[in-house]
Figure 1 (cartoon, each protein chain N blue to C red):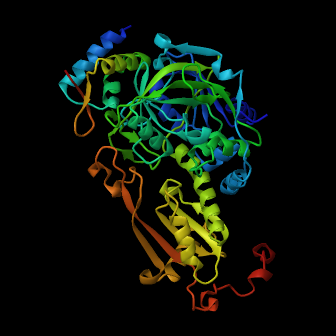
Figure 2: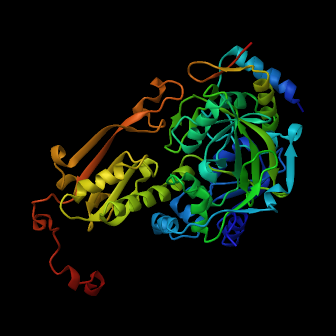
Figure 3: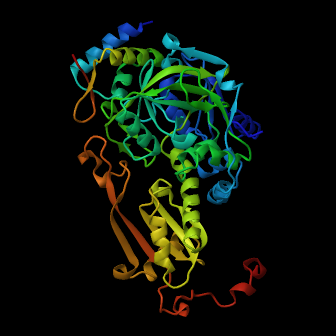
Length: 62
Length: 448
Protein backbone atom coordinates (compact mmCIF):
# COMPACT_ATOMS: atom_id res chain seq x y z
CA UNK A 1 0.00 0.00 0.00
CA UNK A 2 1.58 3.33 -0.97
CA UNK A 3 2.30 5.72 1.88
CA UNK A 4 1.15 9.32 1.94
CA UNK A 5 4.71 10.36 1.07
CA UNK A 6 4.76 8.07 -1.96
CA UNK A 7 1.45 9.53 -3.11
CA UNK A 8 2.58 13.11 -2.45
CA UNK A 9 5.52 12.47 -4.79
CA UNK A 10 3.14 11.11 -7.45
CA UNK A 11 0.86 14.14 -7.11
CA UNK A 12 3.88 16.43 -7.41
CA UNK A 13 4.90 14.71 -10.66
CA UNK A 14 1.36 15.03 -12.01
CA UNK A 15 1.26 18.74 -11.28
CA UNK A 16 4.76 19.27 -12.66
CA UNK A 17 3.59 17.67 -15.88
CA UNK A 18 0.68 20.13 -16.21
CA UNK A 19 -1.82 22.07 -14.06
CA UNK A 20 -4.76 19.93 -13.03
CA UNK A 21 -8.00 20.05 -11.08
CA UNK A 22 -8.33 18.03 -7.89
CA UNK A 23 -10.72 15.73 -9.79
CA UNK A 24 -8.10 15.06 -12.46
CA UNK A 25 -5.59 14.17 -9.74
CA UNK A 26 -8.15 11.84 -8.11
CA UNK A 27 -8.78 10.11 -11.41
CA UNK A 28 -5.05 9.61 -12.03
CA UNK A 29 -4.72 7.99 -8.59
CA UNK A 30 -7.53 5.46 -8.96
CA UNK A 31 -5.35 2.78 -7.33
CA UNK A 32 -4.84 4.80 -4.14
CA UNK A 33 -7.17 4.97 -1.13
CA UNK A 34 -9.05 8.27 -0.96
CA UNK A 35 -7.90 8.97 2.60
CA UNK A 36 -4.25 8.48 1.63
CA UNK A 37 -4.71 10.96 -1.22
CA UNK A 38 -6.08 13.54 1.24
CA UNK A 39 -3.13 12.93 3.56
CA UNK A 40 -0.70 13.37 0.68
CA UNK A 41 -2.51 16.46 -0.55
CA UNK A 42 -2.36 17.88 2.95
CA UNK A 43 1.37 17.26 3.14
CA UNK A 44 1.92 19.21 -0.09
CA UNK A 45 -0.30 21.99 1.24
CA UNK A 46 1.67 22.16 4.51
CA UNK A 47 4.92 22.43 2.51
CA UNK A 48 3.34 25.25 0.46
CA UNK A 49 3.85 23.31 -2.77
CA UNK A 50 0.28 23.86 -4.08
CA UNK A 51 -0.33 26.90 -6.27
CA UNK A 52 -3.08 27.94 -8.68
CA UNK A 53 -2.99 29.27 -12.19
CA UNK A 54 -5.30 31.96 -13.53
CA UNK A 55 -8.03 29.41 -14.34
CA UNK A 56 -7.88 27.88 -10.85
CA UNK A 57 -6.01 24.72 -11.82
CA UNK A 58 -3.51 23.41 -9.28
CA UNK A 59 0.16 23.61 -10.10
CA UNK A 60 3.36 22.83 -8.23
CA UNK A 61 5.20 25.68 -6.53
CA UNK A 62 8.84 25.79 -5.49
CA UNK B 1 -36.67 17.46 24.87
CA UNK B 2 -35.95 18.85 21.42
CA UNK B 3 -35.35 16.43 18.57
CA UNK B 4 -31.67 16.00 17.81
CA UNK B 5 -30.07 15.13 14.46
CA UNK B 6 -29.52 11.62 15.77
CA UNK B 7 -33.17 11.27 16.82
CA UNK B 8 -34.24 12.57 13.41
CA UNK B 9 -32.14 9.89 11.67
CA UNK B 10 -33.70 7.24 13.89
CA UNK B 11 -37.21 8.51 13.05
CA UNK B 12 -36.52 8.53 9.30
CA UNK B 13 -35.06 5.03 9.53
CA UNK B 14 -38.11 3.76 11.44
CA UNK B 15 -40.42 5.32 8.83
CA UNK B 16 -38.52 3.59 6.00
CA UNK B 17 -37.18 6.91 4.69
CA UNK B 18 -33.46 6.19 5.09
CA UNK B 19 -31.51 3.90 2.79
CA UNK B 20 -28.84 2.01 4.72
CA UNK B 21 -25.93 0.88 2.55
CA UNK B 22 -23.94 -1.78 4.37
CA UNK B 23 -21.35 -2.50 1.68
CA UNK B 24 -17.89 -0.98 1.52
CA UNK B 25 -18.04 2.27 -0.43
CA UNK B 26 -15.13 4.14 -1.99
CA UNK B 27 -15.25 7.66 -0.53
CA UNK B 28 -14.70 9.24 -3.95
CA UNK B 29 -18.07 7.82 -5.06
CA UNK B 30 -20.14 9.18 -2.15
CA UNK B 31 -21.43 12.24 -4.00
CA UNK B 32 -22.59 10.34 -7.09
CA UNK B 33 -24.27 7.66 -4.97
CA UNK B 34 -26.14 10.26 -2.92
CA UNK B 35 -27.50 11.83 -6.09
CA UNK B 36 -28.52 8.49 -7.60
CA UNK B 37 -30.35 7.25 -4.51
CA UNK B 38 -34.10 7.82 -4.24
CA UNK B 39 -33.87 8.37 -0.47
CA UNK B 40 -31.34 9.86 1.95
CA UNK B 41 -28.44 7.43 2.31
CA UNK B 42 -26.52 6.24 5.35
CA UNK B 43 -23.20 4.84 4.15
CA UNK B 44 -22.35 2.52 7.02
CA UNK B 45 -18.88 1.56 5.73
CA UNK B 46 -16.82 4.17 3.95
CA UNK B 47 -13.55 2.49 3.01
CA UNK B 48 -10.64 3.70 5.10
CA UNK B 49 -12.83 5.41 7.70
CA UNK B 50 -14.32 4.49 11.06
CA UNK B 51 -17.05 7.11 10.74
CA UNK B 52 -20.13 6.52 8.55
CA UNK B 53 -21.63 9.28 6.40
CA UNK B 54 -25.22 10.34 5.78
CA UNK B 55 -26.37 12.61 2.95
CA UNK B 56 -29.25 13.54 0.69
CA UNK B 57 -31.53 14.36 3.63
CA UNK B 58 -32.89 17.56 2.04
CA UNK B 59 -32.58 16.74 -1.69
CA UNK B 60 -36.26 17.45 -2.46
CA UNK B 61 -39.02 19.52 -0.88
CA UNK B 62 -40.59 16.25 0.28
CA UNK B 63 -37.38 15.00 1.95
CA UNK B 64 -36.84 18.31 3.74
CA UNK B 65 -40.44 18.22 4.97
CA UNK B 66 -39.95 14.66 6.23
CA UNK B 67 -36.75 15.59 8.02
CA UNK B 68 -38.53 18.49 9.70
CA UNK B 69 -41.76 16.51 10.25
CA UNK B 70 -43.65 19.47 8.68
CA UNK B 71 -46.26 19.37 5.86
CA UNK B 72 -44.62 20.09 2.50
CA UNK B 73 -46.87 23.07 1.77
CA UNK B 74 -46.11 24.72 5.09
CA UNK B 75 -42.32 25.07 5.02
CA UNK B 76 -42.47 28.87 4.87
CA UNK B 77 -45.46 29.44 7.14
CA UNK B 78 -44.22 26.98 9.79
CA UNK B 79 -40.82 28.65 9.81
CA UNK B 80 -42.49 32.07 10.05
CA UNK B 81 -44.74 30.94 12.90
CA UNK B 82 -41.70 29.58 14.71
CA UNK B 83 -40.01 32.98 14.43
CA UNK B 84 -42.63 34.45 16.77
CA UNK B 85 -41.50 32.24 19.64
CA UNK B 86 -38.02 32.84 20.98
CA UNK B 87 -36.29 30.39 23.29
CA UNK B 88 -32.72 31.13 24.31
CA UNK B 89 -30.11 28.35 23.98
CA UNK B 90 -28.84 26.70 27.16
CA UNK B 91 -25.36 25.67 28.19
CA UNK B 92 -25.04 22.06 29.26
CA UNK B 93 -22.21 20.39 31.14
CA UNK B 94 -22.59 16.98 29.47
CA UNK B 95 -22.47 16.88 25.71
CA UNK B 96 -22.68 13.73 23.58
CA UNK B 97 -20.55 15.54 20.97
CA UNK B 98 -17.63 15.53 23.43
CA UNK B 99 -17.48 11.81 24.11
CA UNK B 100 -14.22 11.77 22.13
CA UNK B 101 -11.84 14.76 22.21
CA UNK B 102 -8.73 15.18 20.05
CA UNK B 103 -6.45 18.22 20.34
CA UNK B 104 -3.00 19.31 19.24
CA UNK B 105 -1.14 16.77 17.11
CA UNK B 106 -4.10 14.38 17.37
CA UNK B 107 -6.23 16.75 15.27
CA UNK B 108 -6.61 15.02 11.92
CA UNK B 109 -9.28 16.08 9.47
CA UNK B 110 -8.44 13.05 7.30
CA UNK B 111 -10.10 10.88 9.96
CA UNK B 112 -13.41 12.36 8.73
CA UNK B 113 -14.95 11.07 5.45
CA UNK B 114 -15.02 14.53 3.85
CA UNK B 115 -16.55 13.91 0.43
CA UNK B 116 -15.49 15.30 -2.92
CA UNK B 117 -18.80 16.61 -4.24
CA UNK B 118 -18.56 18.00 -7.80
CA UNK B 119 -16.03 17.54 -10.61
CA UNK B 120 -14.63 21.05 -10.64
CA UNK B 121 -14.56 21.63 -6.87
CA UNK B 122 -11.21 22.77 -5.54
CA UNK B 123 -11.09 19.85 -3.11
CA UNK B 124 -13.18 17.86 -0.66
CA UNK B 125 -15.72 20.00 1.15
CA UNK B 126 -17.39 20.06 4.54
CA UNK B 127 -20.80 21.39 3.52
CA UNK B 128 -23.10 20.93 6.52
CA UNK B 129 -21.28 22.75 9.30
CA UNK B 130 -23.10 25.25 11.53
CA UNK B 131 -20.47 27.85 12.40
CA UNK B 132 -20.80 29.61 15.75
CA UNK B 133 -18.95 32.80 16.70
CA UNK B 134 -19.33 35.32 19.50
CA UNK B 135 -21.07 38.47 18.26
CA UNK B 136 -22.06 41.66 20.03
CA UNK B 137 -23.95 41.86 23.32
CA UNK B 138 -23.32 38.23 24.28
CA UNK B 139 -25.14 36.82 21.29
CA UNK B 140 -23.77 33.72 19.59
CA UNK B 141 -23.96 34.15 15.82
CA UNK B 142 -24.74 31.06 13.73
CA UNK B 143 -24.37 30.52 10.02
CA UNK B 144 -23.64 27.77 7.52
CA UNK B 145 -20.39 28.13 5.57
CA UNK B 146 -18.56 25.75 3.27
CA UNK B 147 -15.11 24.56 4.34
CA UNK B 148 -12.57 23.26 1.79
CA UNK B 149 -10.13 20.64 3.09
CA UNK B 150 -6.55 21.90 2.98
CA UNK B 151 -4.55 19.67 5.33
CA UNK B 152 -4.65 17.82 8.65
CA UNK B 153 -5.69 20.85 10.68
CA UNK B 154 -6.81 23.48 8.16
CA UNK B 155 -9.72 24.25 5.91
CA UNK B 156 -10.56 27.18 3.72
CA UNK B 157 -13.80 29.07 4.39
CA UNK B 158 -15.81 31.20 1.98
CA UNK B 159 -16.24 34.65 3.50
CA UNK B 160 -16.45 36.63 0.26
CA UNK B 161 -20.22 37.25 0.37
CA UNK B 162 -21.53 39.78 2.89
CA UNK B 163 -22.48 38.00 6.11
CA UNK B 164 -22.43 38.39 9.87
CA UNK B 165 -19.37 36.16 10.11
CA UNK B 166 -17.57 38.27 7.53
CA UNK B 167 -18.35 41.37 9.58
CA UNK B 168 -17.03 39.72 12.76
CA UNK B 169 -13.91 38.54 10.94
CA UNK B 170 -13.28 42.03 9.56
CA UNK B 171 -13.43 43.43 13.08
CA UNK B 172 -11.00 40.78 14.39
CA UNK B 173 -8.70 41.37 11.41
CA UNK B 174 -8.70 45.07 12.21
CA UNK B 175 -7.39 44.16 15.67
CA UNK B 176 -4.91 41.70 14.04
CA UNK B 177 -6.54 38.90 16.05
CA UNK B 178 -7.82 35.44 15.05
CA UNK B 179 -11.59 34.91 15.28
CA UNK B 180 -12.47 31.78 17.30
CA UNK B 181 -15.25 29.69 15.78
CA UNK B 182 -16.78 26.26 16.27
CA UNK B 183 -18.20 24.17 13.42
CA UNK B 184 -20.93 21.67 14.36
CA UNK B 185 -21.68 18.83 11.97
CA UNK B 186 -24.86 16.87 12.50
CA UNK B 187 -27.17 19.77 13.25
CA UNK B 188 -30.93 19.26 13.14
CA UNK B 189 -32.55 20.85 10.03
CA UNK B 190 -34.31 23.34 12.33
CA UNK B 191 -30.86 24.57 13.37
CA UNK B 192 -29.64 24.62 9.75
CA UNK B 193 -32.70 26.62 8.66
CA UNK B 194 -32.22 29.05 11.52
CA UNK B 195 -28.52 29.44 10.82
CA UNK B 196 -29.32 30.24 7.18
CA UNK B 197 -31.84 32.93 8.24
CA UNK B 198 -30.80 36.58 8.29
CA UNK B 199 -31.88 37.32 11.84
CA UNK B 200 -32.35 40.98 12.74
CA UNK B 201 -29.66 42.64 14.91
CA UNK B 202 -29.88 41.66 18.55
CA UNK B 203 -31.51 38.29 17.83
CA UNK B 204 -29.46 35.09 17.75
CA UNK B 205 -30.20 32.40 15.20
CA UNK B 206 -30.12 29.73 17.90
CA UNK B 207 -32.87 31.61 19.78
CA UNK B 208 -34.97 31.25 16.65
CA UNK B 209 -34.05 27.56 16.46
CA UNK B 210 -35.22 27.15 20.04
CA UNK B 211 -38.55 28.71 19.15
CA UNK B 212 -38.92 26.36 16.18
CA UNK B 213 -37.94 23.34 18.26
CA UNK B 214 -40.26 24.32 21.09
CA UNK B 215 -37.32 23.96 23.47
CA UNK B 216 -33.80 25.33 23.95
CA UNK B 217 -30.88 24.38 21.73
CA UNK B 218 -28.22 22.83 23.97
CA UNK B 219 -24.74 24.27 23.79
CA UNK B 220 -21.48 22.88 25.08
CA UNK B 221 -18.36 24.79 26.08
CA UNK B 222 -15.60 24.04 23.60
CA UNK B 223 -12.35 22.61 24.94
CA UNK B 224 -9.87 24.94 23.21
CA UNK B 225 -11.78 28.15 22.44
CA UNK B 226 -14.19 30.45 24.23
CA UNK B 227 -17.06 29.78 21.82
CA UNK B 228 -19.79 27.20 22.36
CA UNK B 229 -20.78 24.38 20.00
CA UNK B 230 -23.99 22.39 19.49
CA UNK B 231 -23.96 19.86 22.32
CA UNK B 232 -26.09 17.29 20.47
CA UNK B 233 -24.25 17.48 17.14
CA UNK B 234 -22.29 14.51 15.79
CA UNK B 235 -18.90 16.17 15.30
CA UNK B 236 -17.44 19.56 16.25
CA UNK B 237 -14.38 21.30 14.90
CA UNK B 238 -12.96 23.95 17.21
CA UNK B 239 -10.50 26.58 16.08
CA UNK B 240 -10.06 30.07 14.71
CA UNK B 241 -10.09 32.03 11.50
CA UNK B 242 -6.51 33.23 11.06
CA UNK B 243 -5.96 37.00 10.68
CA UNK B 244 -4.55 36.72 7.17
CA UNK B 245 -7.38 38.34 5.25
CA UNK B 246 -8.67 37.15 1.91
CA UNK B 247 -5.35 35.67 0.83
CA UNK B 248 -5.54 31.89 0.39
CA UNK B 249 -6.97 29.96 -2.55
CA UNK B 250 -10.44 28.48 -1.98
CA UNK B 251 -12.81 26.90 -4.50
CA UNK B 252 -14.02 26.55 -7.16
CA UNK B 253 -17.22 25.09 -5.72
CA UNK B 254 -20.41 23.71 -7.25
CA UNK B 255 -22.91 26.06 -5.67
CA UNK B 256 -26.57 25.79 -4.67
CA UNK B 257 -27.55 27.51 -7.94
CA UNK B 258 -26.26 24.46 -9.84
CA UNK B 259 -23.26 26.25 -11.38
CA UNK B 260 -19.67 26.58 -10.28
CA UNK B 261 -18.49 29.57 -8.34
CA UNK B 262 -14.97 30.61 -9.37
CA UNK B 263 -11.71 30.24 -7.50
CA UNK B 264 -11.77 32.73 -4.62
CA UNK B 265 -9.26 34.15 -2.15
CA UNK B 266 -10.37 33.60 1.41
CA UNK B 267 -9.21 33.26 5.03
CA UNK B 268 -8.11 29.96 6.61
CA UNK B 269 -9.75 28.04 9.49
CA UNK B 270 -7.12 26.52 11.78
CA UNK B 271 -8.55 23.57 13.72
CA UNK B 272 -7.40 23.21 17.33
CA UNK B 273 -9.71 20.35 18.35
CA UNK B 274 -12.04 17.75 16.91
CA UNK B 275 -14.65 16.31 19.25
CA UNK B 276 -17.36 13.80 18.40
CA UNK B 277 -19.84 11.22 19.59
CA UNK B 278 -18.33 7.79 20.12
CA UNK B 279 -20.48 6.50 17.23
CA UNK B 280 -20.52 9.75 15.25
CA UNK B 281 -22.06 10.05 11.79
CA UNK B 282 -20.62 12.59 9.33
CA UNK B 283 -23.37 14.69 7.72
CA UNK B 284 -22.83 15.88 4.14
CA UNK B 285 -25.09 18.33 2.34
CA UNK B 286 -25.09 17.52 -1.37
CA UNK B 287 -25.13 20.44 -3.76
CA UNK B 288 -27.15 21.89 -5.32
CA UNK B 289 -30.62 20.78 -4.24
CA UNK B 290 -30.09 20.19 -0.53
CA UNK B 291 -28.78 23.68 -0.03
CA UNK B 292 -31.44 25.07 -2.36
CA UNK B 293 -34.36 23.51 -0.46
CA UNK B 294 -32.97 24.61 2.90
CA UNK B 295 -33.04 28.11 1.43
CA UNK B 296 -36.64 27.72 0.19
CA UNK B 297 -38.23 27.55 3.62
CA UNK B 298 -36.31 30.58 4.80
CA UNK B 299 -36.99 32.61 1.65
CA UNK B 300 -40.72 31.82 1.68
CA UNK B 301 -40.91 32.76 5.35
CA UNK B 302 -39.08 36.02 4.70
CA UNK B 303 -41.46 36.89 1.85
CA UNK B 304 -44.55 36.14 3.97
CA UNK B 305 -43.11 38.28 6.75
CA UNK B 306 -42.05 41.25 4.64
CA UNK B 307 -45.38 41.37 2.81
CA UNK B 308 -47.38 41.29 6.05
CA UNK B 309 -45.20 44.05 7.51
CA UNK B 310 -45.90 46.09 4.37
CA UNK B 311 -49.60 45.68 5.05
CA UNK B 312 -50.20 43.52 1.99
CA UNK B 313 -52.94 40.89 2.23
CA UNK B 314 -50.77 37.97 1.06
CA UNK B 315 -52.53 34.75 0.08
CA UNK B 316 -49.68 32.52 -1.01
CA UNK B 317 -45.93 32.55 -1.63
CA UNK B 318 -43.61 30.22 -3.50
CA UNK B 319 -40.01 30.23 -4.59
CA UNK B 320 -39.30 28.79 -8.02
CA UNK B 321 -37.14 25.68 -8.34
CA UNK B 322 -35.30 26.98 -11.37
CA UNK B 323 -34.05 29.95 -9.36
CA UNK B 324 -32.36 27.63 -6.88
CA UNK B 325 -35.40 28.04 -4.65
CA UNK B 326 -34.28 31.50 -3.69
CA UNK B 327 -33.72 34.12 -6.33
CA UNK B 328 -37.17 34.23 -7.89
CA UNK B 329 -40.44 34.48 -5.99
CA UNK B 330 -44.13 34.41 -6.90
CA UNK B 331 -46.67 35.91 -4.52
CA UNK B 332 -50.45 35.98 -4.74
CA UNK B 333 -52.15 38.91 -3.02
CA UNK B 334 -55.63 40.24 -2.40
CA UNK B 335 -54.90 43.54 -4.04
CA UNK B 336 -55.91 47.07 -3.25
CA UNK B 337 -54.89 49.96 -5.50
CA UNK B 338 -51.11 50.26 -5.83
CA UNK B 339 -50.38 47.16 -3.81
CA UNK B 340 -49.00 45.18 -6.72
CA UNK B 341 -45.97 47.44 -6.78
CA UNK B 342 -45.91 47.85 -2.99
CA UNK B 343 -45.63 44.09 -2.77
CA UNK B 344 -42.82 44.05 -5.33
CA UNK B 345 -40.83 46.67 -3.41
CA UNK B 346 -41.21 44.69 -0.22
CA UNK B 347 -40.15 41.40 -1.80
CA UNK B 348 -37.20 42.90 -3.69
CA UNK B 349 -35.87 44.47 -0.50
CA UNK B 350 -34.88 40.97 0.63
CA UNK B 351 -31.16 40.37 0.10
CA UNK B 352 -31.33 37.30 -2.14
CA UNK B 353 -34.51 37.91 -4.16
CA UNK B 354 -33.54 39.00 -7.66
CA UNK B 355 -36.85 38.61 -9.49
CA UNK B 356 -40.40 38.76 -8.21
CA UNK B 357 -43.79 38.44 -9.78
CA UNK B 358 -46.99 39.38 -7.98
CA UNK B 359 -50.35 37.99 -9.10
CA UNK B 360 -53.93 38.21 -7.91
CA UNK B 361 -55.28 35.95 -5.17
CA UNK B 362 -57.18 33.69 -7.58
CA UNK B 363 -54.07 32.64 -9.49
CA UNK B 364 -52.64 29.28 -8.45
CA UNK B 365 -48.96 30.17 -8.06
CA UNK B 366 -47.97 26.47 -8.25
CA UNK B 367 -49.48 26.28 -11.77
CA UNK B 368 -46.97 27.78 -14.25
CA UNK B 369 -49.68 28.10 -16.92
CA UNK B 370 -51.79 30.33 -14.70
CA UNK B 371 -48.79 32.43 -13.71
CA UNK B 372 -47.83 32.86 -17.35
CA UNK B 373 -51.41 33.83 -18.22
CA UNK B 374 -51.27 36.56 -15.59
CA UNK B 375 -47.88 37.77 -16.79
CA UNK B 376 -49.04 37.83 -20.42
CA UNK B 377 -52.39 39.56 -20.02
CA UNK B 378 -52.00 41.78 -16.96
CA UNK B 379 -48.65 43.35 -17.77
CA UNK B 380 -47.65 46.33 -19.82
CA UNK B 381 -43.83 46.30 -19.80
CA UNK B 382 -43.49 50.08 -19.71
CA UNK B 383 -45.78 50.35 -16.68
CA UNK B 384 -45.73 47.09 -14.75
CA UNK B 385 -42.05 46.07 -14.80
CA UNK B 386 -39.85 47.56 -12.11
CA UNK B 387 -36.05 47.50 -12.41
CA UNK B 388 -33.80 48.55 -9.54
CA UNK B 389 -30.08 48.84 -10.25
CA UNK B 390 -27.06 48.72 -7.96
CA UNK B 391 -28.52 46.36 -5.35
CA UNK B 392 -26.65 43.79 -3.27
CA UNK B 393 -25.93 40.54 -5.14
CA UNK B 394 -24.36 37.14 -4.73
CA UNK B 395 -21.15 35.99 -6.43
CA UNK B 396 -22.68 32.79 -7.67
CA UNK B 397 -24.72 34.67 -10.26
CA UNK B 398 -22.52 34.70 -13.39
CA UNK B 399 -24.44 37.67 -14.80
CA UNK B 400 -22.82 39.94 -12.16
CA UNK B 401 -19.39 38.98 -13.62
CA UNK B 402 -17.80 38.03 -10.28
CA UNK B 403 -14.44 37.30 -11.95
CA UNK B 404 -14.03 41.04 -12.58
CA UNK B 405 -14.22 41.89 -8.87
CA UNK B 406 -11.20 42.53 -6.67
CA UNK B 407 -10.31 40.22 -3.79
CA UNK B 408 -13.00 40.53 -1.12
CA UNK B 409 -15.06 42.95 -3.26
CA UNK B 410 -18.87 42.61 -3.15
CA UNK B 411 -21.00 42.46 -6.30
CA UNK B 412 -24.14 44.40 -7.20
CA UNK B 413 -27.01 43.45 -9.47
CA UNK B 414 -30.19 44.79 -11.06
CA UNK B 415 -33.42 43.41 -9.62
CA UNK B 416 -36.68 43.07 -11.53
CA UNK B 417 -40.26 42.92 -10.38
CA UNK B 418 -43.33 42.22 -12.50
CA UNK B 419 -46.72 43.41 -11.34
CA UNK B 420 -48.99 40.83 -12.93
CA UNK B 421 -52.08 41.80 -11.00
CA UNK B 422 -55.09 43.15 -12.87
CA UNK B 423 -54.14 46.78 -13.51
CA UNK B 424 -55.90 49.61 -11.74
CA UNK B 425 -58.67 51.04 -13.85
CA UNK B 426 -59.39 47.83 -15.83
CA UNK B 427 -62.62 46.20 -14.70
CA UNK B 428 -62.16 42.61 -13.52
CA UNK B 429 -64.91 41.42 -15.87
CA UNK B 430 -62.48 41.74 -18.80
CA UNK B 431 -60.41 38.99 -17.18
CA UNK B 432 -63.27 36.63 -16.54
CA UNK B 433 -62.13 33.13 -17.60
CA UNK B 434 -64.31 31.17 -19.98
CA UNK B 435 -66.17 28.25 -18.52
CA UNK B 436 -67.79 25.43 -20.52
CA UNK B 437 -71.56 25.51 -20.33
CA UNK B 438 -73.10 23.10 -17.72
CA UNK B 439 -69.64 22.24 -16.39
CA UNK B 440 -70.83 21.76 -12.81
CA UNK B 441 -73.89 19.69 -13.75
CA UNK B 442 -72.43 16.73 -15.62
CA UNK B 443 -69.97 13.93 -14.92
CA UNK B 444 -68.14 11.98 -17.59
CA UNK B 445 -68.99 8.54 -16.16
CA UNK B 446 -72.75 9.26 -16.08
CA UNK B 447 -72.92 9.05 -19.89
CA UNK B 448 -71.41 5.56 -20.28
